[in-house]
Image (cartoon, rainbow, N blue to C red; front, top):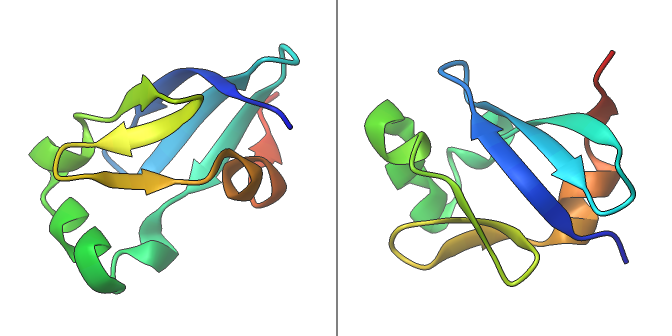
Length: 78
């Protein structure tokens, strides 16, 4: 399983990720913003507080997305 080693939250609700494999990828969080606790991430200031913990991306308030999901649903950055 790939783990996330770096995250950069952009204002367009996408996150730039670097995985333990060295791959840089882009993940679109927008489809999650209508689901449960993720609705809170519509607040850009909260969204931009993304951080790495337990090998994945987390946000304040116990929000996270599994690293497998982040990898499988992301696209390579050029």
